[in-house]
Image (tube, rainbow over all chains, first blue to last red):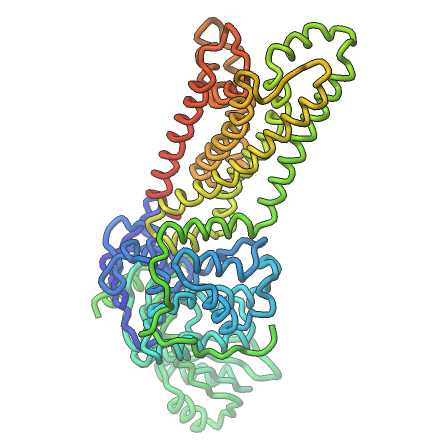
Length: 319
Length: 282
């Protein structure tokens, strides 16, 4: 179990992580979700004792990371930034880490097999593709067979096969009763991987809930409509209380994104006026929920939405 | 990479990998693995060996073949008064650059590649990492530099033996040859400390080169006796005293005092490095 209590980290007078508290339970994949710059990596680094918080603390099974003896037996971490010497082989990288923990060299071979790197284990890691590097990172994390795993953006830049592999790995690790915390800015990835979500923006907790709840709570359900009679339908939708965003025309059909009206109502409106629809797609998704939750907290987002969403963030922080 | 590997780990979480508590010996093994598994370390040491012994032989040969040449008399007096200092001086003077670069690199390469994060995740109390690195590096340097110092001495004295009779049994000679290895070893640790403080390769190498090569020149330009006093206590000036068999009248320190001064500088630098390592975000 991981507990973060009131974690705060200030860089240059600006809070990267702002009084953040949450717990990560074992036995499920917990997604740590937020836009770029929200403070996910900084939070993970504080949990792992790499960065010192200005206030607050993080506990791993009730102890600070730096108080763990041979911590790789308890916690495995895959950080977003690479941490391998390009001139060193994968095997030697794993070997020196194993030696610090008293882990036998045979375990190095086990994790190399686990991640499928045994054939390139003696090649210089600098020549590894991104996918191979991520696999080496997973091998490092699994070296001590830890009960707690922290993975920072593990699917970044991976091909579909690699994404699937990481996804299945995380799920099976959680199913074995381990604690898995995985950060991402990709909402859809989290929707299929995580059982539970911790959503942060601008270093603050926005919400902490099950993935299903976060999706269900989405008020920003939008509907995508394609019709050759876009102008007329848009007028009708607006008159019925919906909001329409016009997209580009394609093959003679206009694209409308509608909020405030659900798809059955739009279908009825279209039928009543004999408007032909080519497409009618409800877009309610984690993506929509996430965008709404974090719209005020995107580091470099568009101006104007900040104040309203900051108020929302305040509400969200006390769920 | 071809097939997708099985995702199921070899053990369940209730059954951690065996062999807990490697302790400090484990860290020493790990640091040795780090040093030997990167080519730059090996190559820097090879360059050091070649430069040291090569330049020693070259200078000795030039001196020997030019023994009766014009304006050789003054130099010959200098050579005869301090034959070990003369034989070892050129090789050490150039070879110390390789040692300083290596001392910087074994820590700054961890920062530039991000390995430091892996190292500190494995040893979150941090200081044992620096301690183990210093011990392993010091032992490696001591072995290599002592071998090189003795080889250089034998090569140089063999080339010069017709005019410069010098043997290990002569007063101060063994101390000076061993001292050359000691000086280079401690200099390597000073470079390690500076690399740990500055964390960037280029800045650290510039700093150690400034301390070893540039500072003595600058303080040498200072007027009066306080310039000489500052000069005498600089790490390089004080540290190399131990490689000379002949004390000159202006030497303010004895060979061992000079070496002690270098050691004090190095211990202070390592203490600052340890403090910064402990207190900075990695």
